[in-house]
Length: 242
Image 1 (cartoon, rainbow, N blue to C red):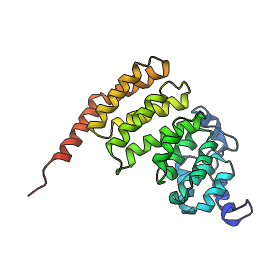
Image 2 (tube, helix red, strand yellow):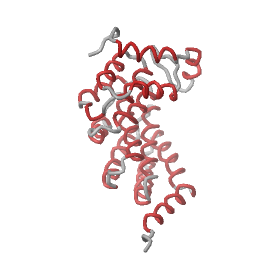
Image 3 (cartoon, rainbow, N blue to C red):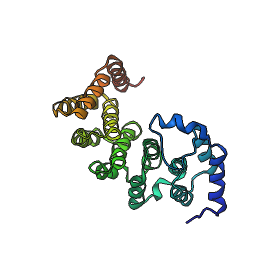
């Protein structure tokens, strides 16, 4: 465990402080990017800090323990995903207090963890707002980046989306919608499955369900998405040159 006096952690925190923009905090807050101790770094600056530090699981946990939102995003970027324990992932998810930290950590450390799919299942029914958001932010990211997952994995995940579609909380419903749209843009078969799920969600009748369904259908049934998926299918089925 590193403490604030440890050179490695002290160096990381110094890099963050050097790039801090406290004058940006008011503008960030208008986009829901808030949190105690926030420094006001942009994502390009955060990524540069993480690249300077390199992978270091011990440092990742020490950065997380500072409670500084930008340090927690860096923690996700420098973490070694295979070393993240189930308990550690749960603790980090429980500590999410803003959507940007949630989404960035899900898209870095959690995405690459062998426990990712298990955590989608576990967190999707939690009542904590940002833990539940984490389930669907992670699912949305897996839909884009997990090339090994089968269509059946994502079809099964649609039931989690349908079950969460009545959640009124803004940060949850937006992540549910995000996951539904990303699944539906993965390939033609999943597009059809996601559109069918959106119609079922629409029939639930609640305000968040109607919004999730309408927004997803608008994109998934659009000419742009349909043309892109059709072209992808044609390229996939094109015979190899002789």
